[in-house]
Image (cartoon, rainbow, N blue to C red):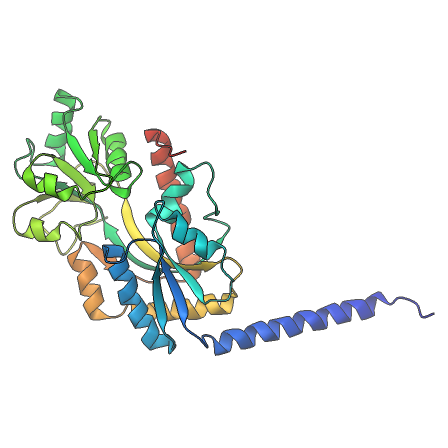
Length: 327
């Protein structure tokens, strides 16, 4: 009987590892060889859905394979996000992740069917939208500081429309209340748009991204009192930042990005990230995001991972301070 040779075993394992690496490299080099499913965890026809379809069309041109948007809405984006968390890590099922799904939900639910940090591999940011303080022109204040003074003089008198408890608009308002040390009265619109009542003057303000309001702001039916960002946005040069208004720590951003299931080969992630870099160069799409007070922007996987980590930490603090829990 021959003796066991540990060196032969090591050589065998090394050969297997090299073979697997070679196979993975070949897979990444030929990727993609079939259509890619881009899961959008929000309703068809919504603003985020439109953004997903626009970038999918660009990726289709660049990658040479059809990128199909599949809408899987429900449960505050939990359903669609979970679909991708449990998909094969082969680059053919991707997720349009958002502020809500990646940065907010993990802090509002003690139990989720997925782990936002462990179950996904970031690919690239898609774009960011600055948050605006949108007011009815007849509101009893014309600036951020006047709003804060009004809330101090008449506690609980400032009405704030939200798209439901735990929504982006709600938590952005909670963040403002914490930053300004003022109590606001939140009015949730769970199944209808709050903009009708805001336009009618039945609600004072709303904290939100600007796509749904930009037309009314331009027409003078609504007023933009302030916007997030380190400097004034070129689409709204006369609107002060919250930092200028005395709230430098108020910085919510609504963002979208593309992620894959954890375990997706790094070479595939890099290939997709490079495709996103090209896709976000479309000048028409870039101008569209700019008009909405945002920026079409791609990143490397490492940059996107760092972005999500920092953003999640900020929202976690807001959720804890506001005491918002949904389970």
